[in-house]
Length: 273
Image (cartoon, rainbow, N blue to C red; front, side, top):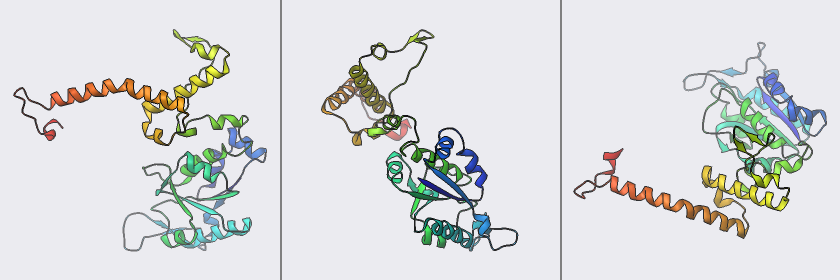
């Protein structure tokens, strides 16, 4: 996998992705990272790449020319058009499924905006994907790009020492990861679950799957409709829902009584808010 990052702050990308697992993966040739300074493609003698927005308004907008020429230079190096990912809160929200899709590419170009954004005309010309890392606003696209590169790189063969670990972490099979334990066997009166000390691999695997299902049910139930579960695991999930049902029923009954006065006349819901 070859990553190209178009940015005004190349040192931020290089320092952020040059250590730990990704740094080692670059040294081993599993992935490559090249930063492209958009200022190098400015035709202004001072290297300016921004100007005031037409129509007025606060802030500055990145000009289309430098961005366009930077994209052209990278595509010329690659020898063809590649996917250009523009980091913007207006884009499709990045998730594990998208990471798996992008990991199949040979090259990816990340475009990092700043100020009030980038001139729309160059985005229409060059960008293939608008991507967001969440419903919030950051000062620039560098941090989202680094998040995405980290996530995608873990799926590139050979980047992780144990490739199996990428298959059992959170969001694999649309489930959250099971809880992890290490030495000591007892800490502050809390012991490691006995099943993990048993050496019985089938039981351990079953326990871990059940813990993943339970944790997802408790913390991220929105993931469960797309989870890949065996028939036995579906029955386990049904049992979790059944156990939770009495609590929900009690809450509903409590809510009903709270909405009813002593005379049995229902109050308006707005009166309780």
